[in-house]
Image: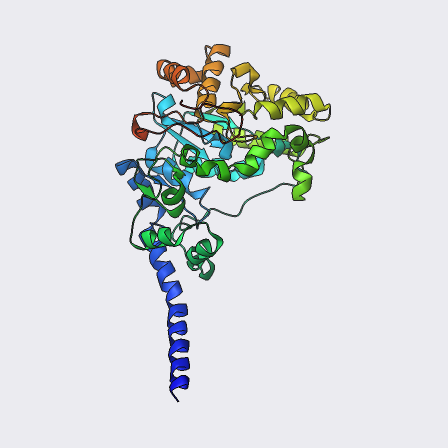
Length: 405
């Protein structure tokens, strides 16, 4: 009888602990700010200088729209995640980065219209990913959901214990999150909302740009391991990247332009112009080893075809695919196709030098970006006043970079 009671007691305890997991996970989610709504989040970004990095919700499209709505910018950057290093500090007038909400040029049709529903920018820097124009079939994300942040599903509720099981967070970090602590990543001295911001220092600023704080800590070496391989093995990467993934060959080889994708670009531009904005087209850079590998392969001729097609659009256009013209080396890149703050400032400076009469000239803080380029050359993160004191970046690409040393 005594053994039977012990068995029942153990079974009861197990059941209680099992039933408590969702409640504990919910508490972690709640206390980390993952249930806050976008208007509340964006207000906090502006009022406190916080960064927002969610580990649960896909708000790549919705968050920039709310930022645009609250900031009412005169100049915006529009594009994929590659444009997230445009920052307010580069400009003299209100700016917002409506970046991350476009996975294709077709996405841009609806996204440009959504941006114009919330604001009336005077100038749009439209950053284009070259692989958007070689996709055979149009690709579109689902409709925007303003309530996306804060929505919970059973799978989301159980994510914290899964992170614990996977080793993404430690038991101590779980308890600290449960206790409401929001500074597990002390290298970034900003308030933080969302588990990704709290744990890794990765999050969106009030202007819609991104702070990748994980690059400031030793854990960034492991975090960037897959991206490091892409750059170090650039010749292999540009020939086999998408084939390994079983998806569209973004980097080729032997891709061809699809006329329908260029027609979609024309529709995006027409929408923006109808909303009163002037449009500048930009091809952002890839890392130097990747640009070199593509140029030497002899099988990426679609890049020249795209360049000609964009020049024929009758718009101001700048091709920075090869960062050699910017004097931006591999240490100013985070991976194969994401440049950092310094490279994006170099792009603005190059645009003004190439087109002194560009409408962009009225918006860029030239003295500030010149000083920042000189001071932070060789880094991906250029700390401005709002960022506080940041430690040196680690060499995430294993390229011998002495970032901030």
